[in-house]
Length: 280
Image: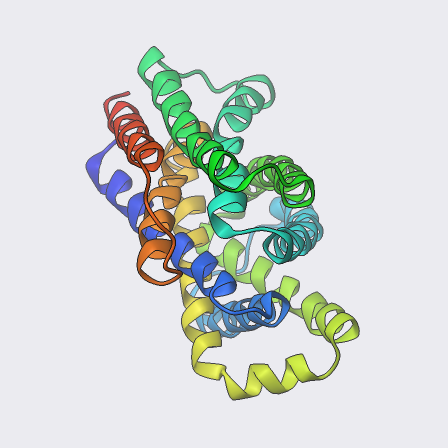
């Protein structure tokens, strides 16, 4: 994989970790999620006039992606309500790289070198170590683990759907913008129905957070989908999960969570996995 692609994916990973910390940084995760989706829709609407309309073959994938992402954000909110980011985030992001690689091999006929498989395994292993650290320090919690594992499966599904959709769209950023815009239309109905109109007031009050978080969401996913049009899906998906590393760093400084020796070991695994992916 070329250095330019690798660096862009790592940048996308930083943005991805940032908006996850933003969701978890306050108690009202539903409102924060709504803010991010609304902000990404605004960014998408501003961006869409400058890119071509997605090609017709991708629209079934686009529609499926919207439905899958509604499930993803719903499970994300439930997981963060029930558990800490240091438990939920590694589980959600640690399992998908390996599952995506297997699914891409079966469904998309993508083959990887042994370095690619090694890198994917090390990134996933490093991520799952973080959840083991949480279990040793806090104890077993069924609800957040269950929501996180379900969302890991959802992540694999939307990764494969969106990778194929982006490849058929003619423009990955146009595909991303339309997906987030259509997703926001559903959230404007769903979130107020669940949380009440106070969420709408919060969206108006915290419009700066909405725009910043939305820009991070749009740029992060747009870059990832673009990368999947020029590189194997499994490698891009695994490299993107270095967001776990950046999320851990941000959670220490923003959420005041601590680093243990297990987390240090996970950092080594994730970095080594990223190097192996670059060399594959």
